[in-house]
Image (cartoon, one colour):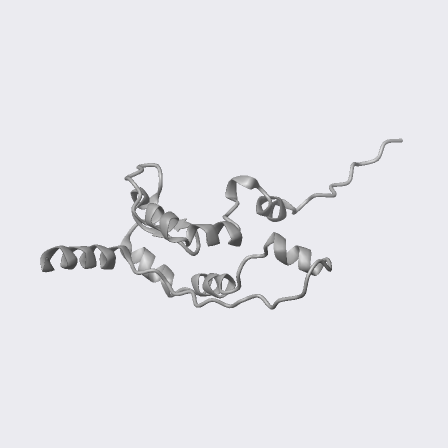
Amino acid sequence: MTYKRKKYHYGDTHLQKRWRTKRRKKDLDEIDEDLKDENAKKLLNQDIDLDKPGNAQFYCLHCARYFISDQALKEHFRTKVHKRRLKALELEPYTIEESERAAGKGSYQVAKKRKIETQTSHEGTNAMEDDAGNSE
């Protein structure tokens, strides 16, 4: 006598989508690397790329997201998602030295807190550059 097969993974699509690598965002340590001056300048002043939203001209460094316009970027700066990301970036990322101290190869040090502020919008940076050029 045959039995009907059981559907063990019925209703799991929302869980499967969460772990797909095509939707994976940058981790906090990768974003911390992007916040360094030389990397930040490259990311904020990207060449026009027609495949990315807003032609890659409106980028949030802290969230690693592209936006379609400066208005959308400014609205994003006021959201809870962005504010939570700023709070998460306040602690320095976990390092190899810290893991060695946790294993007993050194004395414990409390992770340092940093003050992370929202980047200026794209229009604001262009206006500042224009003012600097006119004052010379």
